[in-house]
Structure formats: C-alpha cells, structure tokens
Image (tube, rainbow, N blue to C red; front, side, top):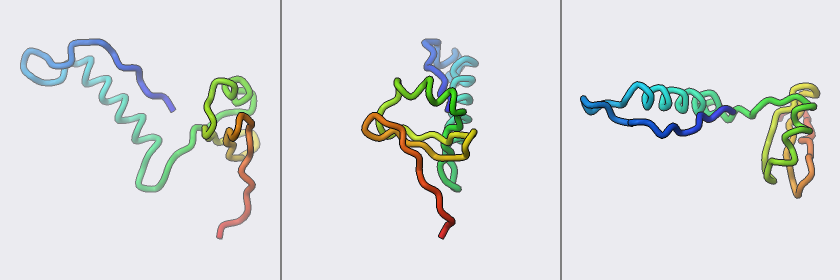
Length: 90
C-alpha cells in the first residue's frame, strides 16, 4: 500500500483554507486509505514471489501479503514466512 510521506509545506493558505500542497497530500492519503479499507473488508497488499523474497527481511512479524503468483496469503510469523492454508468457505 502506498502511503504518501508527509510534506513539510505551508498547510493553510492566506484565506484560511488548505494550501494546494496540503490538499494534494490529504487527497493522496485519503485515496490510499480508501483503497486498503472499506465496508467490504481489508485489502491485502499484492506482491509477486520475487518481490516478497526481496522485502521479507525488512518486514516485522505479523506482516501479511497476498502473493499473486501462487494466489496465497502469506504471513511472517516468528521470522519465517507461513502460507495460510485454503479450504472452501464455509
């Protein structure tokens, strides 16, 4: 998920409203949150197997991904990647 970095800019313009830079930042942040959260549930970040191997060492325990090559949910637990076994619901 892309979360925009906070910009150190003038936040309020001379008329008392958000500056153009602040409004752009807020729009990007809100869009990122809407893409990941909804009334229909959480959206897991999608990642390929190759990219997962590259980012995994830097991620803390509890990080969850949707690995798109194998169509599996993967969680880092106790320093190791574990896939969620899938069975039909319910």
